[in-house]
Image 1 (cartoon, rainbow, N blue to C red):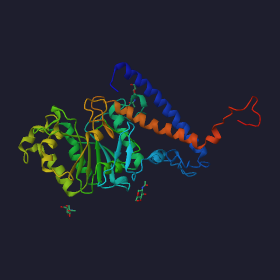
Image 2: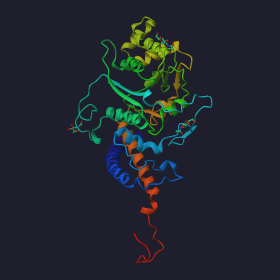
Image 3: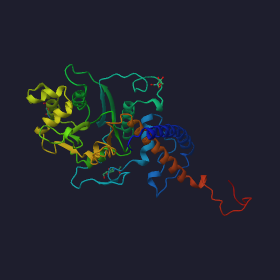
Image 4: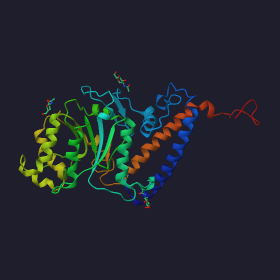
Length: 374
Ligand SMILES: *[C@@H]1O[C@H](CO)[C@@H](O)[C@H](O)[C@H]1NC(C)=O
Ligand SMILES: *[C@@H]1O[C@H](CO)[C@@H](O)[C@H](O)[C@H]1NC(C)=O
Ligand SMILES: *[C@@H]1O[C@H](CO)[C@@H](O)[C@H](O)[C@H]1NC(C)=O
């Protein structure tokens, strides 16, 4: 997990191989899918692998195709438990509000940046993009875009106007506020933050974190270190992953936050216009003290929504949302692995659903194979 140079070259090779594999797999699955949708029968005992498409129901549009590809693997929103790849068992708290209806386009996955990058590997570059020259930022944004497609959420990448007198990271605050005028829920992520389980509906995570219909926003804790504490020694919250829910009071909260560096309400907030950690320090040092009710601002455990397993603080493992502060190109790896994992599962599942056609056990026969056809 730690980035040793030799290992990272090896990893790079692995990714290239994986990506080539993914490409071939895609062609194969699509071909096989076309050929066999009319003959498939779902496996009763292996529902995660069951093929769901009805004959002739292959969607022609990419979002439809993507959601169809992931459909057999989605975690059920009504399931109260989830066991992670590391073996951590998560239970939705008994008293938590349950989000069981798909939020669809009411939920917006939001990316924001002020820079217009048109260089090699950039998302906004119109040249055909090769998987091996995707930049880290493009990898993160495509991860978010893919997640939105899988679950049918809305997606925007917004190039925000710069503030003349503030650090660039501030723009997420007014942009989330604006996005809440058209969407009930806004999920904002930094470009170096990724979804670890593409098949996990966001509604399930909202239940896990006990986001209720009256919650204004939810935000993840930072690792507990001296540098990450506010003036009173309280650990800061990280603005790299924010869930905001539309309401008049949410608009008010974002308005107070956005105006913080004017110094009108909080005179000491002026410095956070430019000093690190900018909007994050403004929120942690000032705004949150006016929203102390935990149902107003829900704190997402650092383990679930921030950090990564390779950082020093083992309470910040980035289980559901991982934040690659120190490895800005690792979102590319998450994107590739997420896609490849789905294809391997579906190929494997398809093989099992058609095993009677593709597998012949001739082990007990003698040559020539009498009474048997390949
Ligand atoms: C979850 O439960 C609700 C209410 O019982 C039901 O309407 C919905 O279809 C279920 N969702 C899934 C994915 O099973
Ligand atoms: C990919 O990388 C190559 C070589 O670095 C470059 O010429 C090309 O423009 C890049 N493509 C994109 C879409 O960025
Ligand atoms: C929200 O604010 C608007 C405008 O001030 C007002 O018309 C509306 O009634 C408010 N909604 C609620 C639920 O308080």
